[in-house]
Length: 417
Image 1 (tube, helix red, strand yellow):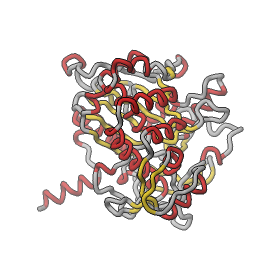
Image 2: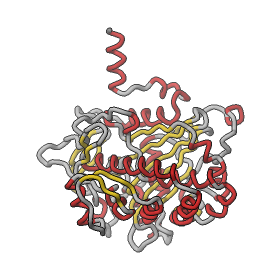
Image 3: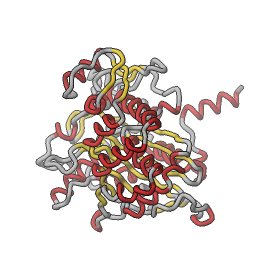
Image 4: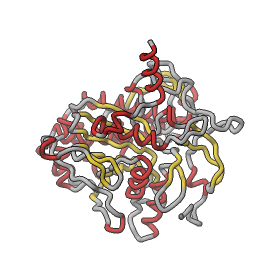
């Protein structure tokens, strides 16, 4: 079992860890109310903005989609990386009769009518430093139930990384990138992160897309910026670290550079303007990202063809993927159909199935999200069932039967009444 490479510092691996009060180990670091009130408020992260760009530009301008999409970097799976992709990306009109029922493959839940694409927001891809997966979002194109599903994986989730030891989930990308560079590769850590998610959560990931965060400011600026309500602490943090000044408490029109930094703030509390709920640390950051995404999607609706074309030409070169050009064009052709599906979101780990805790392990002292309950019960199997129930619904009997603790309580209560 490999651990941290000798030339790697603990600070590099633990960069960005959320703060937890040392006097209260095991303390939850989410909001005062750990269960979101609405499914809409479950986290989807910043990668969805790039995914929306791909679909919208392709659907609105199919005649030039092929030329635009040819600008991204296609990275075929290497033989020594194992079988990363397991299912071809098919046409949206393929029927259940053609593709058959869902089934298990190599111990993973799988359905030929559901395409799972892992989207990774990565800093410094291809630079002299090793990139980090700051955002991890899986998009499930569910043709069986005609839904678009988004699963956000929290970066501090403590998991077993194949070939290594237990680390935070996003470290899987880092170690994979480091391994690739040491073997003379490009620094692509996605294959190891894919294997890590598959091993720990049992869902079959078909493809991945890496998005260099350098593209993000271009998206915001091309759409004229975004309006965001800032607290005094958030405004001060942005003025000190975003590279631009002028942010004030209250409503602000953020530039691309400012919005990028706003989406990554984690040491200021976040107050939901709709519900009044307060979130801290990584929980606050993912809700800032959700707010930015919601605003971007609204701005997309008002964008004209010229803006979309300009946006596409700027963003596509920042994409790296093992989706082949032909498969990418198939996705583009079906874009409007997928964007017309109702969207559902999910957070992994679920708030009922994890705790935030400061631990000491082979990496030293760090703050992580443990797949267990406060009384110490291991919830990895429950998390696996919860995730795959969200993706595949009733396609597997054990998934249809699974219930969260709160769902079991609700069922007991209604039976008693």
